[in-house]
Image 1 (spheres, rainbow, N blue to C red):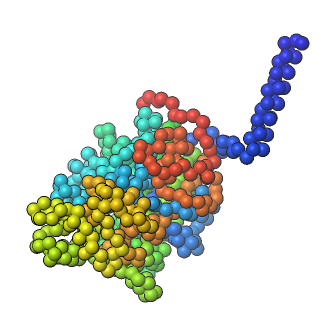
Image 2 (image 1 turned 180 degrees about the vertical axis):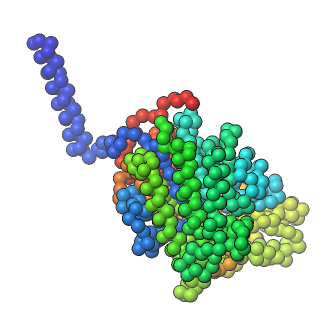
Image 3 (image 1 turned 180 degrees about the horizontal axis):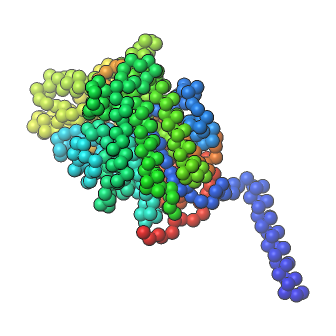
Length: 542
């Protein structure tokens, strides 16, 4: 047999073996790895976060949607209809940290929108700005209190800094929480000046294009105008824009469109999505939460805001199609939390509901403790759900801290309060078993959480007014949120299996073949993946 004949025999045998192997895999039910719909990674990832957005908005506002806004995402993206946060403190700051890090408060330390810092003897917010000045357009030394890396941090690590991470919001804390420690830029709307301010890393100067954007005085053309169909209330009462007007402006669809326009400018001017490495843009929209608090989450105003946002979303998608290319970007849409109906509306329908006024609760509990233990300032602070006892008062008394905690928990069970757990119970791992126990434990972080963790009853909220609503409970109306991922890397369809906003970061990491963020607890949403990556980013030099 000649060498050529040997070669053909071997080739024929090899092909036969391959055919047998393929038949074995298909016949045995073993799934072969999915093959990429496109061989490239996304050039740009856009994460859109509505601070407050109940899942029911998709059905309740469907008649307001155009074909190329939410419908485009829902019809052509992966829609996870059973997405739910699995921690109890469903406040915006906590859950923005979940989205960015894939981890919950027991790991990140973000236990609320704010909490009491005993070292500073004051309330602190989830973000920290050291050199901030009112009206300043550039800020340095800022970060968030969150532990662990974000997906943006991991993206920059993997590409040796070539990837760029930009976060944008109408609120400073939102922008900083999403940016991560190494994000290139964080931009937010400054209500003192009516301009975008920024946090810059690596001694990067405040971009000239941002100054030009600010010179447009975007918001001022809406002074004295009303965005609601009723036309009952206008924003800004004077002839000139001031801090009051800028604050009111946040709660309008114009503010949402402004954030979209600013993001488009950032993508254009910073050439995001144009390099060899994937870039990430995070945008949060606080208007949804503010309108929910002012008018009610299921009010005509809230529905109108959703409908107007649909148009802004369509505008963004059209821009990305033209600038980046439809096959080159990935969109994630989710929310910081859901929302309950206003207590007044619920009571009118015969349901048990109401408001637990936070300051009154604190004062009543302090009075009750004083009548039993002796007059003292037993309660130092209350940032629902975390109540902080005055440890100095306990040290100077004849009582032990666990005993005071236990008594306070008993006395605090007033109307509207479902349960109170103590720090000693967490320390001893003796928190009573119940339906919310796992979510409560995920929300407790030693050193920041209070001596008491106070949970309202369903239908009740810690707030100061009843015309709107407040978030922060472990119940489904606060915990369940939309999650839609749109792009070639996902199979379109509806996915009803359990999912979690903590899954976002690990899933993006899987698509890009990166390490998941350091504390990530979520899973990869593999049921919807349309791609299994083959190679990691190589070492790249700046």
